Length: 175
Image (tube, rainbow, N blue to C red; front, top):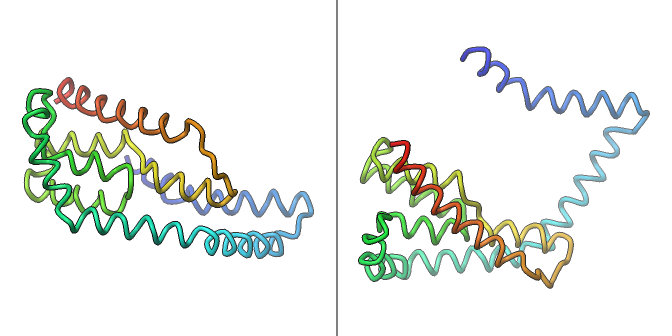
C-alpha cells in the first residue's frame, strides 16, 4: 500500500518531467509552447464563460426552488417498487448537470445515512458510474464551436441511466 501511495504521489510530477524531457529531446521550445497553450486556454475560457454562467444559474434555480424535493416526493412510490432509494433521486438528476452540486448532495446523504450504509455505498458507486453530461458537453462542444450535437445527448443520457441501474445492481449484489 505504501508503494502505491508513493507511486500515486510522484505520478503527476513524473508526467510533467517526462513531457518536458521529450520536448527538449525533440528541440521544441517548451516554455514558449507552454505560453502559447496557456493563451489558447484563456481564449477558450472566455468563449465558454457565458454558457457556463447559464448552466450555473440553472443549477442554482433547480436546487433552490425545491423542485428536487418535489420530484423526490412525487416519484417515491415508483422508486420504492424498483428498489431504488428515493433519497438518491436528487443525486441521479443533478449528476447529469453539475458535479459540485452533486457533491453537496452526496455529503448530505453521508451525513444523513452514513457512508457505510446501503444508501451511502450506492451513492458512491453511482458517482463512479455516471458523469456530468451537460457540463462536459458545454465545455467540449463550446470550445470547438459545435452547435449540432446529433445523438450525443441521447447517448450520454442513456449511458448515465445504465450507470445508475448498474450502481443499484452492484450495490445489492456486493453489499
